[in-house]
Each structure stands twice: as C-alpha cells, then as structure tokens.
Amino acid sequence: MHYLHISDLHMGLVDPTKPGGWNAPTPRYTQNLKLLTGQWGHHFVALQRLAEFHSRLVNSGKKVQLIMTGDATSFGKVVEFDIAAAFLAGTLNGFGLGIKTWLDLAIPGNHDHWPGSGRIVGRSTNGLTKYFPKQKFPYFTQLRAISPRGVTGLPLGFHAAIGHGIRPTTSLCG
Image 1 (cartoon, helix red, strand yellow):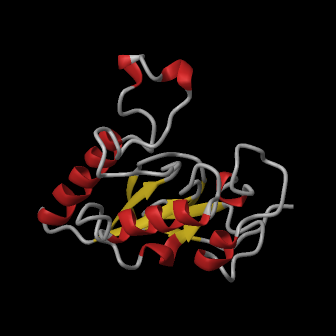
Image 2 (cartoon, rainbow, N blue to C red):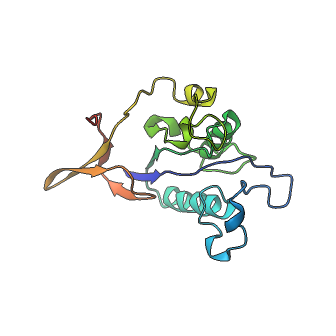
C-alpha cells in the first residue's frame, strides 16, 4: 500500500470556460512571477502535475490511499469545497484524481475553517460541516509509520510524501 499525502490545494473559484479559468485568483504581486507558476496549489499546472503523478502511481499497479491534511479551500466557501471535492473525486469536468473515497483519510485545515472571505475571523461556512460533519478539533496530530524497527510518529505537515505502512492515529494534542 502506498499513501499519497497532499495538503494545501487552496482551491478557489475556477471557470474552465475562460482562458486561464482553471487558475484560481492569486495575489496580484505574484501574478507575473514565472518562477512561481504551478507552485500555488490552486494553479492548473500544479493540479495537472498532481493528477499525472497520481495516475502514474495507479497505472504502475500500486494500490494508493490518499491522505488529505487540510486547506482544500482558499477561503472556506461552500463552492470552493465543492470544487475541491470534484477535483479529488475526478468529477471536475472529467479532470482530477478520481478518488471517490478521498474523505476517508481527510481533515480540514485552517483555510477550510475561514468564513468564506480573506478574513480569518468569523463563523465557518456550511461547506465545512457539509464535507466534515463529524470532525472535531484537534483531529489527529500525527501519523505512525510501522517499520521493522518499531513505530515512529511523524508530525503532520510534510507535503506530497509517499510512504509505506503509514496509518493515522487518534492521538490528541494537549
């Protein structure tokens, strides 16, 4: 079993009918920096590379389980949750990862708790409870890797990592 750990997709509003419409709005100061193209999680290039990477894993015959550790959305808007869910499930205009069970090992991040705008203070939108109805803070705080040497705790926060024998724990932070 291989685990694909992703986070910080920061899906924003996309409109595939317009040129560049797959790219969610980015901060104005970064729009002309070619070096950052594809580095933002909500940029089409990054999503395309992630989908291609996942496809290569699956096509190689490996069984892959997704671990999604937060920030599926940019601002926590319901429509952003819907777009992220469609991408992860592979139903976003035929584009995405095609993982219908993506919520099995997923937790929301701080952006997913935002009130639907750039402000970080306020009540979360209904998108959070729509996709994470049973989640209660602090979720799980580490993954355990089972190896011949024993059990090792890995803090959450590494991005796009592949591992063998990693499973979530329900340890709570203090």
